[in-house]
Length: 440
Image (cartoon, rainbow, N blue to C red; front, top):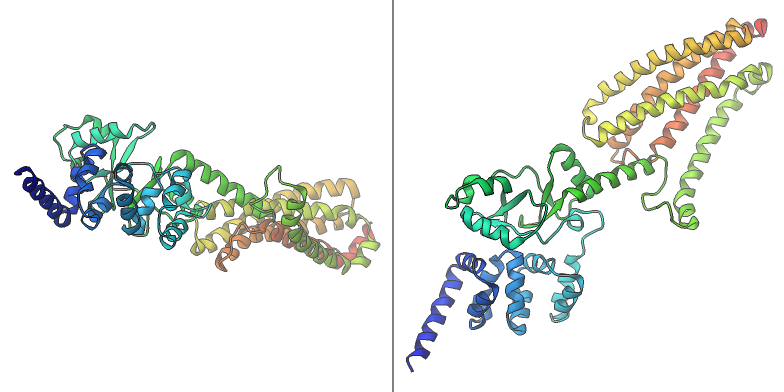
């Protein structure tokens, strides 16, 4: 007879503790087996358990959820804040997620299912959601015990969250191992170097990695709650993929195309840019047609025309590659454009003089015409100077107008260098026509 009132009194005290001190209750639950925590919750009304269950770290919340009777577990999952339910569902395998979602109300299940789907190229898709955080109020001994429970390989640092699950710091495993057991965890907690939002695109993740030499990047949701970690292998993969995408878009190929993609898929992705490239080729051809009579009079010009265009194209490609690298690695921004363009202009001028000297010597040996030498020397210097300017300006202008600087920049540059090369060479030849007539 006396045990029933005692049980009722204990249940009432537990209920009051859960309602008034949910965070403290959550800390107690995290330090006991999930089955024991579930045993304390099972006799409580669901509304009294909800806030304490929401305050649990996602991995412990899942263990407690699985230990509770199904009706109560489904109630907690449905009534909790969506960000909490999503964090718990992310701890599960896809088949297990479907099982739990199938037990929820249709509207709730649809909402959670929509939130579970991260885009392919965002931080949420790249992260490992099963990484367990530490709590700010822990001692070093409690943190080490928590680390033993995790049993995950390759951990060099653990992340620390506050009572709301928000990311507040990080702890090096080496510091944890060397610290005294009764020391507060806060004494060895370091500041977070960088973090990513779950919806950040891959480009932002790569930029963060390039700025900070880190091996693990913590990920937070819109509320700032810690939800996972992007590990070094994923970070390296993101860098490689981002680099390959830039290489493809520079020449008008699709980042979706793979080496073993079907021919029809490749044609669909490439043909539009090839048609645009054809139009630009006609533009270069139109420049040549303006000087048709000059070429007909001096056939040597037709022989040397590809030399000028080829060298200017190579010079432009070098300038483009260096500028693109600077933009990708954030070494330069739009405000640096005068310095970048000036540097490439001087480089193009000096390289043009050097190449022009070699070309002039070769042309004189071949043609014995000083007039032809003067034409190709002047054209080479002008075209390589222009190529350097274009190689720097094309990606900077694309970025200035809100476009990806890698987008078909190679095609645009080729058009510019061809047009300038042809026009400078043939235009100078037309001016030197009387001298060419006397020597050729």
